[in-house]
Image (cartoon, rainbow, N blue to C red; front, side, top):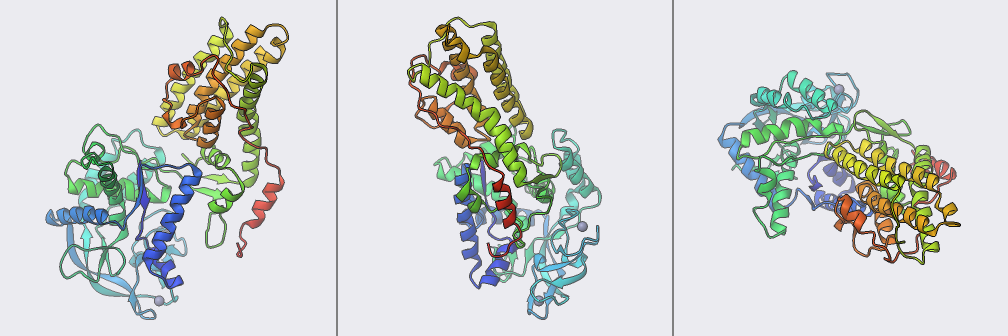
Length: 517
Ligand SMILES: [Zn+2]
Ligand SMILES: [Zn+2]
C-alpha cells in the first residue's frame, strides 16, 4: 500500500506565488500535514512519499528516455498560452474559460470539472489568465509530446476486457477513448518540476500529469529500498499474477485508466497494467460542492480537535459514493453515530462486556454445552466473516460494512432471546455459556470492523484482555474464537462511542462558508 503527495501540481505553484515562498516550502508543508492527518485518522500506508525524491526523478527519466527512444515521445513546436500582463507562459491551470464540450464556464485549462474531459488551454472558449484576467495569446514553444493516439485501440481492447471494473469507470473510459485520443504535450515552460533529461531543455520541466502517475512505481521502488530488499518491488510490478488497485476519485479516472496504462504499454519491461481502478464518484457537503476557497468544507484538523475519528470514518464508509454521487451532512453524521454506531454496535459491546465483568469476576466465563442458538450464532459469524472478506476483495466497501453490522444486529437478537440478565437469577452455567459465546463473536466482529473503525476495534480488543496491536490478529474464525480463553482477564470496559446531540449540527453547519475560520 503505497502512495504519496504530488509535489508538482499547479495548485502548489499558485499558492507559492500568493504567499511569496518557494513551491518546495508549500509542497513540504502540505505533505507533512497529510502525514499527521492520515495518522490521526488511522489511515496507514507502507510508504507515503512524495514526487520530489531523487528516486522518483530517476524512475521518470528512465521511462521518459525509453519512450523517446521508441518514438512514443517526440519533440514538436506548439502554441502555448502566454500572458503579456504577467510576461510569462501560463501553465494550463493558470488559464480558465468555457468548456468546448459541455459549455461549463470557468473550466480549467487542463480539465473540465463538470464533464471530466481533459482539456488544453487552446480548447477553451474565451480563455483568461487566472492571475490578471487578461486574455492570453498563444506563442510558439518547443515541447515533447506523448503519442497517445498510438494507444487508442490497444487501450480500448484492454478496457473491454475489464468486466470487474465499476460501471462508471468503464463507461467513462470507453467513451473517452471512443471520442479519439490526441497526442499531448508532456513538458511545460516551468522552473518547478522534474527536469527534462534531454540537452537544451533546461528551462522546461516534465509536466505533472505525465510524471505524477509514475509515482506509484517509484514509491514501490523506494519502499523496497527502505526494506533492504531492493528487488521486492518487482513482485508487485512484474509478477503477472499480482492484482494492483488504484483508489482514486472520479476526476482522476482518465489519468489511471488511460494515460498511465498508455505509458506502461509504451514502456514495456513487463510492468503490470492496473487490475482495478475503483474510482469513487463525487461527495458533496450539505448538497453543495466542496470548496476550500469558499470554506465549504470539513477541515480535518478542526474535526479531529473535537471528535473521534471513527464516527467520521463510519459515515464516509457507509455513505461512500461508490457507484453514484453522495452527500455528507452533519445531521446524517449525528443520526448515524447515534442510531447505528452507538445503538447497534456500541451498546452491544458495552452490555456484554460490562455484564460479564460485573458478574464473572472480571474474567472470561467457562462455557457449558452449547445450545442450537449458540451454534447458529457462531455459524453465522463464520459466514459473515467470509462475506465481508469477499466484499472487500471486490472493493464493495459499503456492502462489506453493512454485512459486518448485520453480525452486530444478529448478536443483539441472540442476546435479547437468550436474556442472560434473566438466566443469571436461576442458571449461572447457562449465563456463562451465553456470555462466552457473545465474547467469541465480539472478538470476530472487532477484526472485520478494523478496516472501517480501527480505533474502537483496538479498544474492544483491549477490553477483551489482549495487550498487543489488533493488526496482529489474523482474519481467521477458528483462531479468534479459540483466543477467548476461559479464565482470561478482561479489562474494565468504557463505551466505544458517545451519543452526539443535535446542537452539534447547528454548530458545525454555522461554520460553513464563513471566511474568518
Ligand atoms: Zn466540460
Ligand atoms: Zn496574466
